Amino acid sequence: MTNNAKDVTREDFDNVMVPNYAPAAMIPVRGQGSRVWDQDDNEYIDFAAGIAVSCLGHCYPPLVETLQKQSQKLWHVSNLLTNEPALRLAGKLTDLTFADKIFFANSGAEANEAALKLARRYALDKFGEGKDQIIAFNKGFHGRTFFTVTVGGQASYSDGFGPKPGAIDHVDFNDLAAVEALMSDKTCAVMMEPLQGEGGIHASNQQFLIGVRALCDKYNALLIFDEVQTGVGRTGTFYAYQHTDIKPDILTSAKGLGAGFPIAAMLTTDRIAKSLSVGTHGSTYGGNPLACSIAEVVVDTVSDDAFLTQIKVKSAIFKDALAQINDQYAIFSDIRGEGLLLGAELAEQHQGQAIAIMNQAAQAGLLILVAGANVLRFTPALNIPEHDIHAGMKKLSLAIEKWLSA
Image (cartoon, rainbow, N blue to C red):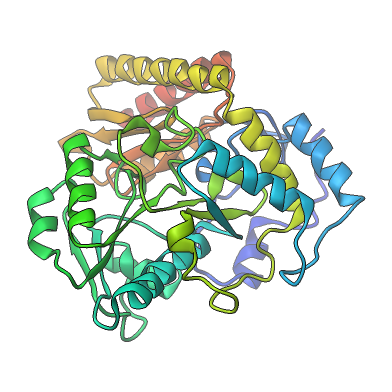
């Protein structure tokens, strides 16, 4: 039923919210699966999933049930105590990965902050002063704290806030020679996304990863994988590093881990974890039993082999549908990505227009994303029904046709 008596409107955002966001005109009020409805009961197919967060769609029944049950048991205890959901979740993550130890936080930025602090602390403990250089990559994205936004390789996000944290250097992604030229005994860590998300959906080259791993070993530097966006099944394996033969020393996870409930994790080994001794780092809400109980269900669901296999099937459906749209309109120069983290780069004559097309798609009843000014980004729920993929692609085709004719 249409809600004609709205308690709040989009105009209220401009009145009461800090203007660092520019949200769409519509306000979503409910969701189910891969569909959402706004205040006027308009329906949208969701190819964004909260920027790769709602990995099991909206109001996934087992998650709703888990939250209801846990809400009647225990909400919060602080880090002065541990709790059962946190311990169970940590055990499941270590069983599924290279890691021995887990630190819980609330967001990807917090997990990355912890990873960077750990890398610096480990280097100090093991090798003394002066081993503090962090190498990261242009167009990377690691969060919005001052440390993480500086390590992220996009100056537009880090400029304008005063002096930046030091000993951070950037090179181009997939440029092994540039990494080798920078690395020395002063390097404490190399940090990367195995598939750059915000930077335009760029996958790492296998030989590049092997080479960086070897350089880290040579110079006693830690390899940090930021899997905030690529993790929890997004690329078709539980974590993206599992597509390769290498292992990071530290891995960060968030977004899909809570399927919409805020939670993040930093994963590492026994040897490295020892440097975060009692009192060196913390989080008031990290390991919250509500969040951890939900993440348990997410991990159990997504790590299943059959579930991961269907992600790869749906990835192929997405890519085929985008290719068909391109055959008709010649709007893309490249369609790329892994699993259900996909990007369609606009052809040269349409460069800079990704946001305009995203807005046109929303008017057609489809929610998509951008990755920079030139790339349409698709991060739907990992369990999106095939009929929703096809229905959404029809809306995208109509939106592109209307945009091109405008």
